[in-house]
Image (cartoon, rainbow, N blue to C red; front, side, top):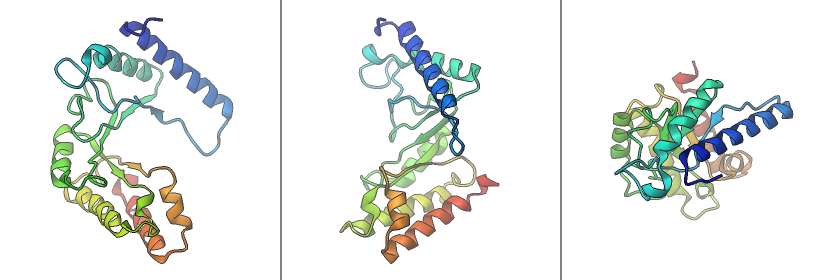
Length: 204
């Protein structure tokens, strides 16, 4: 195949999707479902929007892959970084669910109010971000816990919480590590976060 050709890239994506679905079905899993597919790139590059369009040309692939996924009753999800190329075009590209990363957890200069306003204007939802630095074992964990609490606060303040599905990025094992930690602060935060998830009106 020639991946300089959009048609060949789409064909490869369809092959991959079919392989994943077949192998998932063969697993006969009881406690997990295949909810959909996700493009690895955190930006959708179209003419005049995004880096290196001559190589990426997302418009030749993303809508066609979305159409195929919808024809087999699968969803297409995407999580762009803060103000990534294409974050305002996700619907026209055929994406079903988009969750923009505020990136505030690591870079507090990324204003969370501004990010939430952009999220609302674009009609996306939000991805909550945290990792092992939130654990008390990290010397700066109080700073990171405060930032995570700010995500929860601002999602409510801007009407995102309770109106749209949410996505959570937790590094590799941060949520599990919180749950098994013997540190009282970690345990308290674990239950605080779980209550935030469980009390989401979207669950009803």
